[in-house]
Image 1 (cartoon, rainbow, N blue to C red):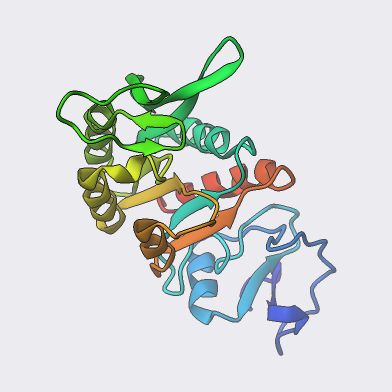
Image 2 (cartoon, helix red, strand yellow):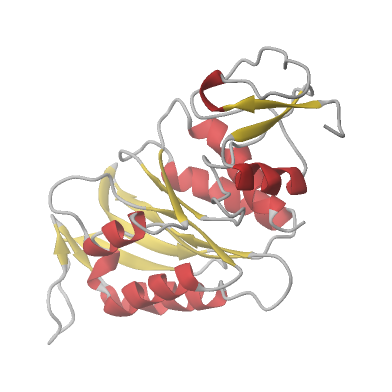
Length: 262
């Protein structure tokens, strides 16, 4: 190879036929502790069976694992995990880092509302700082409107749509070079009472130049139609967030999205 710092290491530990034998790497599940330039990442993704391994102890994501599809394009990244594991915090931190580095980011996240130490509902909060109720315990829908309930929570559809829909429209499609990032936290039962939201999510996922970072519920019970549809898209990668891996995911997410700006 032209760069002696890189050698081939095939999947499952099988070595390529050219170049010196790479030094042993300490791997974590699904991760490679190396980094390559953007063009080398695209070459790696096209090969499909090789990594470009650097002797320099820098970090990268495996192309088939995070962010690069089989044709070398950036995919949407969705995360699920049990309540309280840190999905929203992970999304918030990623959006802050991306914004500080110049990547256009918009969208919304949901936040618990507590009173006297008891959770009484959820708010929807946009990245521009606007906030409104998503749901409340024991509240009543407006007169003449159907009740949208998830357990003890009644969803305020009007408030949700007033905040979430403009945030999705602002996030894409991109008119300039590079990508825009759209935060969608979350695509869950409460949000899916809104048909305009369902349509907006589909449009955002298909918008050129827009990358979605979002959260979905843990699979249980009757599947949610839109969530299953999204899971089956070829341009979507879905990851389980745990207390053990959540800190390690952040730099990989940021690096993945930033690479698309090159």
